[in-house]
Structures are given as structure tokens and as C-alpha cells.
Length: 148
Image (cartoon, rainbow, N blue to C red; front, side):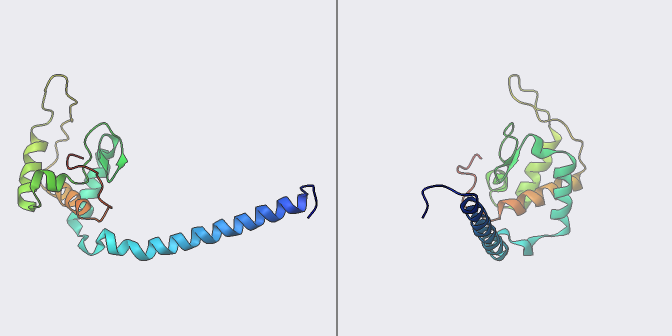
């Protein structure tokens, strides 16, 4: 091996590294594609869940809240709100959501205020279904504590 680093050596390192990481990326992509159906419970997707996701997106909830760790950290994480506020009971959770959304903003001095979105009862129920769906996904114990 020569004592100098040549252009050919640099080219070989570049191409070899590029091929290696391309193959690694392809392998990780294939692994993720195979494993996701086991953890995301896509068999539980319903029209109501899809409408709830639309409500979530249309009202930019992620602009304040986080969901499964993604989003803004201004308001609470909602990845486990179904268990925190509904105890795993959909009817109880929908009741909580109906009341909670109706009384916003709370008007407590010194506390961050959630705006009143004037959602219909059906939209709130759909949002509750969406949050239930996300709470039941296998997300490796996220969030790390019960209060999000």
C-alpha cells in the first residue's frame, strides 16, 4: 500500500461506503415494512378513525400537542390520553372529550388556554376514536409516564 492517499483510493472508499449504506437502508426499510403491521394494528382502522385524523389535521392539533412524541411541546402529549382520561373505556372517553371540548377555553389565569374549535359532537367522537386508535398502537412504552 502506498504512503499517499490517492484519488482512486478516495473514490473506492466513497463508492464502497455508498453501496454499503444503500444496502443497509434497503434492509432496514424492508424490516420496517415487515414489522409495522404487527405494531400499528391497522386492522382497527375505521372510517371514524380516518375522520378523526382529518379533524386532528384540519384543526392543527399537532401545532400545540404531541402525538406519539411528534409535534409541538406546548400542550400535553395525547398518545395515551385514552387511558388517562377514559380508563380504556371508549364510552367514558367520548364523554370526557365531549365535555372537555365544550368548556374550552378554561380561562384559568396563568395557564395555557386551548381555543374553542366549535366542533360538532360527531367530530369530537371521531377525534376520540382517532386518539383511541393511536393509544392502542405499540409504540415501545411511549410516552414514558402516564401524564404524557
